[in-house]
Length: 500
Image 1 (cartoon, rainbow, N blue to C red):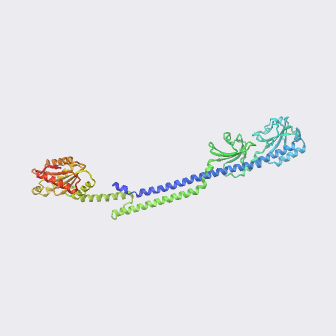
Image 2 (cartoon, one colour; image 1 turned 180 degrees about the vertical axis):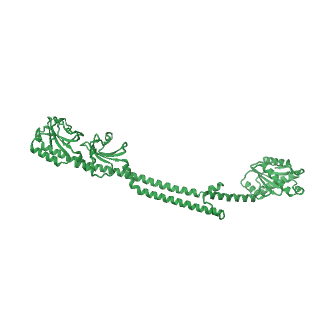
């Protein structure tokens, strides 16, 4: 196929490239927007979770921790100055019992003297030495802070319990013992059941060891809610860390007293889903736009194929049954060009010998001169050709012309252009040949012809030739010099080659 046709017919490929560029640009634009939007939404979600934890921590302190401490301090005020057994008096016991019942989250009140005697409301049983209990504070220093125990097994039923406690002093300021109250963690966890979490996940209150203290799912209380190794990284009053093992992000707020944390653990997948869900309409819009571009691509492609089919039909003068593809158009144009080249070649060929004709010779000679390409020119004339025609007839004369032309093509090869100049005259152009090389090549042709045997035993065919090279002359000057040399060759006896 003609390579020029392949280079020129790029319409179909260019269209594909254009639509691919549109789709790529559209995809890149959407991807950039999606990444930016995702980043912004994730930042907003994390900020929302952090605010939620901070608000929950404030509510927990105001509505859970502070009321517990206040109730314990009130009971402590009631039993101050009552000696070793503060709950033995009916009035004191009644006041303490009333405070216990109106409080939310306290299960019982216990008192241990510095000698180890134990009493409680309601009466739980006998403990031989109250000083061995985790809530007993051996530090006989008056303080505004309430002491919080870690989770520990209850003395009576071995269930896990957490207590708050503070030291008790008499009127003289002497240390008399410790007052404690066990917390009802299940009751204190009820508000967590009704909380609406902004990102899903789990909300809980844990201690320094990672045990769950408050949780909407009360079955989880006293279970390990967070790895202590992660808790060791929660060094600020609030913040967030990422648990890669559980694939979750942990937002936290810490208390000073008690040493607790409000923790909001959100799976990373929940955060991702929260950020991606609002982007679904944008994704649908992108898909619709992409489908529109693909449809336009398809329509444009089919339109081009129809146009190509019309072009083929026009090229084939009405042959409408050809499939309109780029390959067919290229093939059809190549065939048309080949046909034109064939007709052009026929117009420039001598019909008898197959050599180039005089018109082609003039054009090629002019081109060599204009482009200043070095060359040699030879003019050849078959000796006594008129006698050959007169003696053997014009048919044989034509065969002689054909044979001489064929021998010339074989002797000179493709690097030389041979022309029928007129009658029995032949012209030869030898590009990039100096005079000596050109004379040698023509002389070789002459020798081959001279020794050729013919069917007519007495027939002998030779030629005379004049060879020259240009010396900045015009075309006519070169031809004249070659013709003069040919004339001299004939005068000197024919069957020879002269060069100058």
